[in-house]
Length: 112
Length: 113
Image 1 (cartoon, one colour):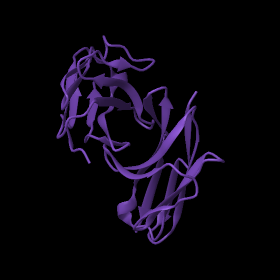
Image 2: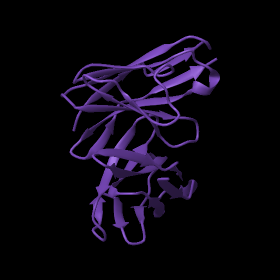
Image 3: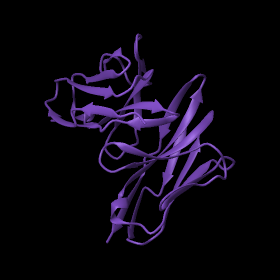
């Protein structure tokens, strides 16, 4: 299975600032996925990051708030922009391998 | 709208007990059902189920899918404190060439010594 490295593992940020989360995979993958898990909630897909094209965002998520980069087939970043306390969540990157989704270690973000 | 419902939402048992976690789903084009264990942040893959009635087993954990009744169960026998975690059920929905994972809210299992 793919090995996914995600960083930072956690951060505490001031409201109004931005945080960029990085995700590195040990093999080339076509699509990478970014999820958010708010406290007590299920994982919600933010967007699908495609190499060479713009990310595809799910309903309720917009590029201005969650810009995504995908410069190559092994790396992606998610930025949480102009943060508010409501953005406090776990953010997870994921790739699909053999029909199964595998996840990075997650980033626990607290916005104060 | 796609929906995955897990029950119970939380469960507290003693070591050695057997537990059954439930997952029911409604999706447009079912492709597979996956179970994950989430201890801190990152969900860890447990099982992928695609066919009805075929049990998947790994140690003390087993799972089975019923595509007619649209549900799956995850069984854990002889529970240990290390089984304490949130167990997530996810269903892969084939949406015209792109597959989307829909997650339930999870069952929080606490195993007391």
